[in-house]
Image 1 (cartoon, helix red, strand yellow):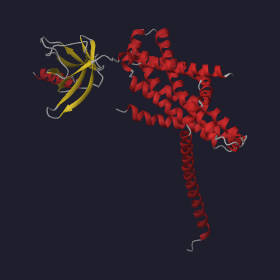
Image 2: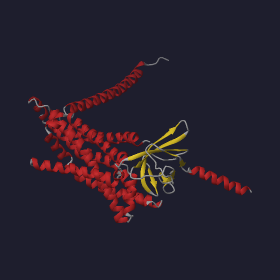
Image 3: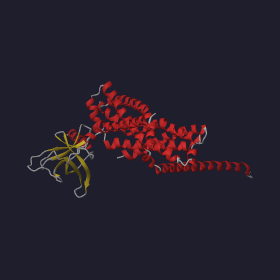
Image 4: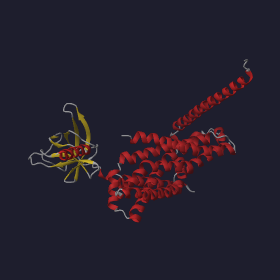
Length: 273
Length: 154
């Protein structure tokens, strides 16, 4: 009845290792959040450059916004088509297919416009921002800037951040508008719902402040979060091809998760009566 | 790409965004129903406001003449106090009556205003005396059930 200490000790050690891994994971998570918040604060503190050199930001709006218009427009159109078709099948059962306009517009302005745009934005613009900054870091261009006494956060990150924050609500509004037109095309032109009832039900049910403005607020927040995640991933990437590829992947994954989680939070805050 | 071309495209992009927002606000939303016309305030006490909401329309003969500005509870009279903004363009006799009605069977609730016959008109801050509360569907059904049960007992 003498317990052998040997196996017991190794079990203990394995347990200790597990606990240590858990602790390290938490500490790294908190340190990552801290670095993220610090980068955000640094960018905000240098935001004066947006007013002093507006052309830098305009270039980024052009790069982030104009180049994303095509994918946003086409996606919005097809989302509107699908909402029109699916909404019609359900509403038709209850004989209230005139409410199709209301259904399409509310879904788009409240949820789908900001969320789908933000997901596409993370994939289209976020990845290119991460890769661009990651490669700048890998090519030691950022270090070279610092040597020349040019602050890379001011010169490179801040215009990109504000470009994303400005471009995102515009893209979301375009997405919602094109989607409503898509729903109108399917509902009124293809199916033959009365256009008067389609628009009047929409106008009586959609509130400018509650629905449209809250959608815009959502898209501004998503724009800031997705752009910031993309910049952070590029800024903190390991300066190797593998590191840049991993950072790009993380931009999409983290961006999408952050958008969906924040969307739930903001919906609960905005639309809870 | 030249600077001017970039600037032009960015300007176009921002204009497109503004156009989309205006479209959503005016064509899809209720911005066009916002009136900036001057209004005057009247109030009325109701036993039950049902599902009436702030910004619900006030209609007379089916025409929107104002909107509900606030709904509160008067703890002295134990009644709901509804404040309404009526458009100054419309004037109604002081003994007009208001009722909470429902558009359609299950639609939104609104306030129906029926003009009375008084010489004097409703002024800013006056209280409408004749009110009719919202019809609560459950009450109606239970009344119907009770009366049909009584009829069956006879």
